[in-house]
Length: 358
Image (cartoon, rainbow, N blue to C red; front, side, top):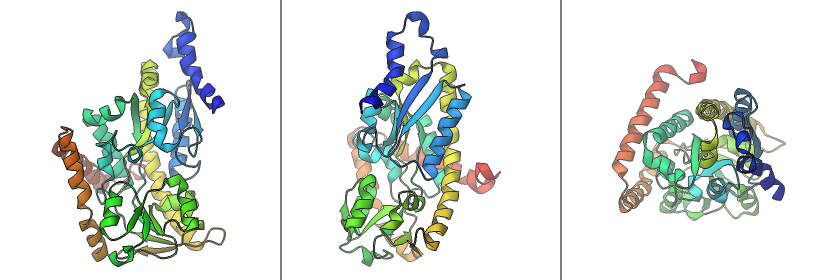
């Protein structure tokens, strides 16, 4: 841990201790520690590596990112605090881990709210530009969010049996988070809270019977080794997470470096969405064929059953609206802005297609 702290301390130390003539931000090299929650593989990791490489190239070597994968620097639940305090310079921040701190961002995790990965990330990235109340959630913690992430469409991964109907939920121990916790409980399951990093072991031990999951993640986290069934349910996405930087550190950078960081981070959404969509299709093919002898069966939820599941998902929004009202937040404004922005990107996708296919 000490070497991790010392690595990232270079930026703060140089700025604080160097003579006045050496504190020119335009010439400063920033060695930035990025704490990530996942492994160095899969579509999101590939997009992060592209992003870091582009920052290095576009800044002429002034912005250098060192990744600490799989929560090796700080645990996922501590990342917001760690980035804000400077223990990590940057990191992947999950709204689900600190719901009391990020209640507006967590609205994006509402079940059945939004389907397409590109539309989802673009919608919430623009929402952050439009809504100061959304930006302020992290900025008051000394964190600036640079880009939005997504899990992509939420599916159900069953360890030994598929879940394809309301009846299948009864008594099942299902790992869930956010609005899906309420949904599964209302459908008759027993929700279990387990961190994503501990999920492999939990499925292997039989601690859970099923979990929310995401097709390319089943492959990249090697969950196919301990679970046999994926139900394609497309229950919305987990969109309330993304990459953040220590705000004071960002403000110490030159305007040129800030612009490079912001522009490259904006482009990250298209790169990750492309990786995700292509990677999801390939992951499905690979797992059906079998990886190291382990095969996964894919099941498609019927429209009738999906309608039943979606009908049971309303409690999350009802409770979220009440919570926002108690905090004095204009929730109808947020929902209205979201609906308008989502429609914009849905229409763009319909009329123009994905950016990388134009």
